[in-house]
Image (cartoon, rainbow, N blue to C red):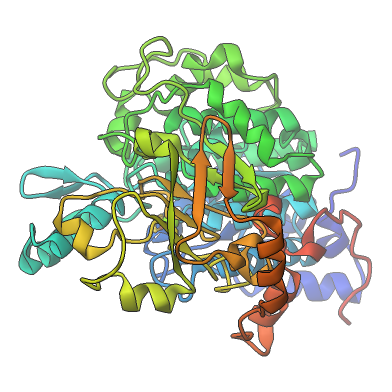
Length: 569
Ligand code: FES
Ligand code: MG
């Protein structure tokens, strides 16, 4: 061995400290040779019964361990905070940065040489990547993988996407409550993440397109035996990566981010990817801006999955998955190193598409130029985004009167009022749902259509807010307005009756109120009272950056790769 491994600073010492580190580990039955200087591989697991999307990760961790042992490494699994998107209040996003801190400090404090990140549910993938990137030990991802397709009454139904549709149908009186309740069990039929192209499958697809996982990680179903085999191979590969000293900073280059942005456009991926990629870029020192996301707007929508299309992740996998997509967009891909050491183009080698209705050819796309649009103007000087592939085309160029909800409680109390003064041309505005405001920037930006309009058959309207929306959601929804209302953004000053202009083609979001009037309103404005007085949530509100910086905490930007030298005894 040429270079002393990092883990030897724990397990290679012949003094009292070495005794302590080894002896206590031996209480689990690890033999002497486990400490002989072989690579120690941390398996960072976000398994939890409260994160049902990650419930299969216990099994995958065992498969990773087999691969690590086989390659001559020593695997050690450790838990980190798990963020169950569907179970946490007020929103799992509030805790993404806390998970990232947990991951970062766990990796740094323990004697490991490389890390396998086991995540899947929306916030677990970015939280783990952000934390690992800030320590920069060799790291590789294995994702949970999607649930099997939802099935109900002989039809495929999709996580999230069909929940939003069904709940609107109940509000419109087109679906009975009994049917609504019965659909629950058919929707989630196996462990795994949402099987629409929601944030989880978006992120696992982007991880693959950035070369941070082995090929096919994006789409293999959670319960497919090939995913366990992939986990095994990942365990083998991380041991080699330690020997090659192949780190996240070698893989997560600007080019890799651009490849992820283009892949996101091609798969019709989640708007949440914007925040997560911006935050991750901040960790590795890549200068990524909202404008870079416009690069995806040359790429057409190729993957016909919900919410932008009609199929589900199982179909996407069987049609060829991410490798087939990378092949279609290959002439746009930037050269970028992967966890395999070679270029990302290798991931598309030998890829084939087996179903052209699921993965369209570049020249015959599902929809042309689908990527995200960045909007700017006096209502969003630091930007806002809209996802044209999930929007109604004529609403993407629209001027209308605002109807304002001051916060989420105002919305919930009034949205179903029969006398709500709104028409299909009204622009619904929601405040107080940004990173500081809610706090945590929840997925409420796709606010429900007012019931009186739902009954008339209206299914989409322009909605503007500082919130996020679920990756499984759809509609003409302007999100991530920055600065947010609670930070004193112009959004805070909008009043019902003001006119707003949205133009996706020109990238505009304008509040048509003159500057003098806005200055008067600003004088009178006060932020809402803080909802948290102590603890992590207080720290979060005090330090969270706005959406255009990925809503990371200001003091977490960047990395620290210095060795930890002091001992505990
Ligand atoms: Fe966990 Fe969708 S809620 S992946
Ligand atoms: Mg989500």
